[in-house]
Image (tube, rainbow, N blue to C red):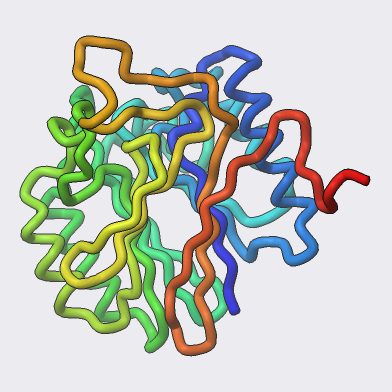
Length: 259
């Protein structure tokens, strides 16, 4: 099997709080008897895209010594993301990447629109996606992006979700190798379907956003009390996708029940 951990919406913001929460998650992953093969971070790495926030992220996310692959969200800055996290030259073009993890192909799409909270996959990204899928070997494929491409019944996220999701749906439905869609942005563990495939929205390590049945903006919609949470995706021998959600106690993970 292949085990992929997913973190999202870490919102490094110069504070110790959000850094410590990611450090707790990375410590939990590093101490697992079966460590993840890869860690995927699906956007909003930082809160406002400053170089100093990316420096925080770079240090904290390297702690587990597990490969970490990242994509930007609406709170990120493409130039600083590239230079500080990826070690690439400064550029404002979309940050799309593809990675191989054993038999698994992970396609990371940049759905951010600089200066805007909503998401969109541009024509250049679709050209890149089609070419990448055409070159991908047989085997399971996970497609990851920040903005959910369908309604998740969040009073905050649904109005700043992915625009024109039908274009992505056509690509996803047309490729049987794609076993799931991974997103962030929602600050909540969500399991649904998109274009006939599982769509998993990862919780945030920083906070939780309420659903339509819980809050109505502009009332308080963000809960900072819960422990940081992550998703753990298993790709089995039949290329099926199974996801577990896990909260990580800030006091430490108990490997065995207390005596």
